[in-house]
Image 1 (cartoon, one colour):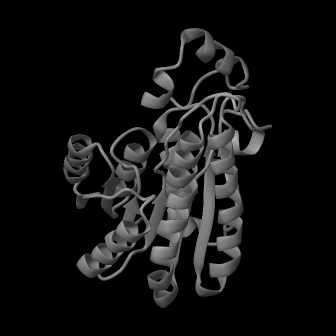
Image 2: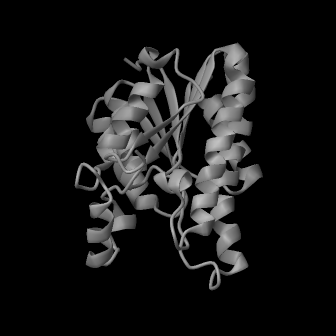
Image 3: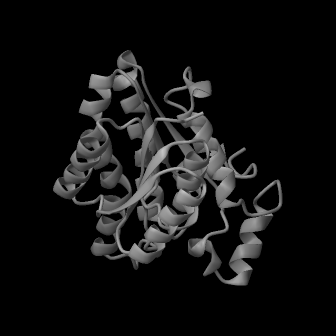
Length: 246
């Protein structure tokens, strides 16, 4: 389904990003596994991609760094001659109530989550416009739709991604480029496994389907949006959250 396509997935060393990289590879794409600090885990994902019969490579880059992100995209295009799919998954949390939240923690989350998304889209847009084709899929969050106490920085960054997604969809549509976002709810990853049991129970109580999602639930939607089957879908925010945002 994605044979011959080149995909770049940011924050792909673990969790949702890893599942997305593997889902795209399973459909035949060559996947660039971007990571910031988790080199060994990124290289492990590449091995898993190769075990699926696809091709992959790990690439270290902090997407909050504009120049480094531009260099990464240039390198990918130089190596493969094109870039068909961009998945913006890289993200961090620095949770706290706003009275206790430091300026540094606010800025760090906005830079990694929202500015990182801006940096990659800016860097790939020229190539995709030249190709007159491309798929951009941004990972936002149910927190960006509903808000979440203790996550002013994270919710703001994810709400920003929603606005960015819709705007980019309008800017790039005339050249055959689609831009969509997937909004996960609570997903069973390293980020949620550290939550106290009482917090997990309270979260589960808010989910109509009564359970946390799996990384593969998000990855399956991303793989669909990256495919030709989704060629008439753009500017959409698709919740994969067990019904939380109903």
